[in-house]
Amino acid sequence: MIPVSLNCQELITMSIRACLAFALLLTAGHAHAQAVSGEPAPEGARVYFISPLEGEVVASPVTVRFGLAGMGVAPAGTQKAGTGHHHLIIDAATPKADQPIPADEHHVHFGGGQTETTIVLAPGEHTLQLVVGDFKHVPHDKPVVSERITVRVE
Image 1 (spheres, rainbow, N blue to C red):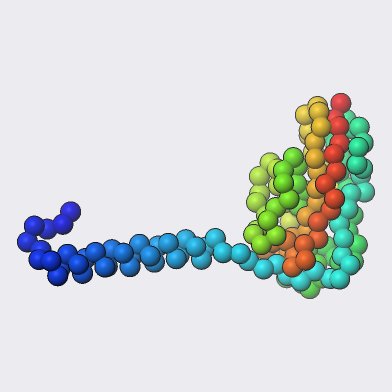
Image 2 (image 1 turned 135 degrees about the horizontal axis):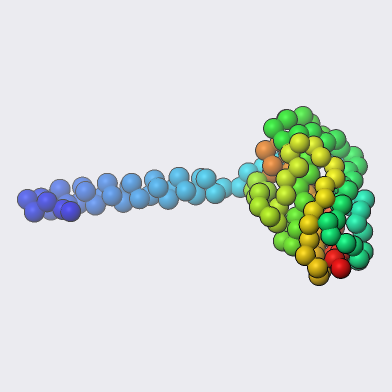
């Protein structure tokens, strides 16, 4: 509430301060949403599915095995050049390359360095994709991403 006893100069000063405070809030929010850079990926690194394969008909629960070539696996939080850890993307778009990979039912993290998992999928078609993230769950600079495969669960 603006006090009634303020003169025009005081009102202008308050308005300027309010605008500056608002601008700082916007800047802080923008800085938080800015892109981040992942660790460099080794040249030629690639991630792929060992199983299941594209178009395969499977029963649930499904055992998914991850393949990785040209780089090593290290747990999340371990900053070591040429390494990363797996993320399984289920029925979702490829995550943004300049943001940490979300963690939810569509973006499953394997921060312990696991190279396989068993997942329960409802009957029907599902897409699966692998993304290797660095120690802070950000895709590498030159993302290491598998082809998206489709499997049918009976």
